[in-house]
Image (cartoon, rainbow, N blue to C red):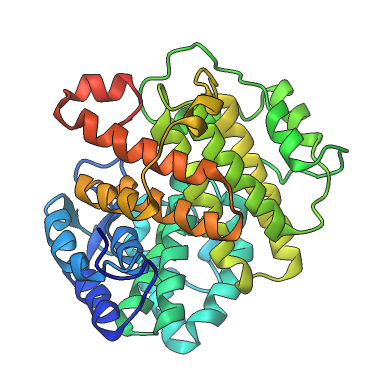
Length: 372
């Protein structure tokens, strides 16, 4: 059982976060071999938020073994020519140095406010991990601004900028459907088809399909972005449950990404919020179109007996899996804002699924969407 109240903070745990960040300092934004994001800094911040910061330094040390060093600096990025370097993955280190310089000259919050409008058109970047990593850093800075947390924000922004890739033009929300109905109407374009390899590939593959563009255009303008994020996160948990036997890992991010988006709202103007939401809607609709199968019974999952939040959190930590910890933290947080049983059901299922599959082969885990 949890030894402290969930969400409790104290000096020991916040110091533990800096300790954990320091142990992973100077590492690349993807794990050894590339393709899978470096979840380390996000996970240790989630552990602190869950009141388990005492575990963060040791977790970081274990995870550090899977990471490689940052690539070398190539050439400076300047304020006048930064657009030329957008999407240049090989210039991650250049972007990191650029953001460190900006933050040294101004407050981290001012830099964030300046750059979010520039980055949200590519909210899909790296499977939305540029957004998610930036949000974890921002939440840590909201607790206490330390040099290591400021540095982590710079890395999150560098990740977002260096992997920058838009799905397409900003959708115009001029339809008549409310968000929940529009989400339900998104066509499952690749239903029943094989999708081996990098998940991001198939999301870009469906982006120009006429049926998807038509479905995206059906959405009405949102009166409250905050309320819309709640709808996205709750629907994301339902999507996870509906696709849990084939693509659970894909739809884990349909909760963690809205939760991250919510964290960044205070640093966005009204115009940026609207633009960010439009691009987020585009990314989520394309994800559903590419991976939605909806073969699993959500009602049954909600009727099943479930453990408590404390038990699910403990089980997720025992799994020692990055997605397990991040997913349960996001589900728990969103459930406090928008109470719904789908969050606990989804978090419980994922922690159980990871525990049961721990002895499976890689091919078995891949066949059931636990790894991609």
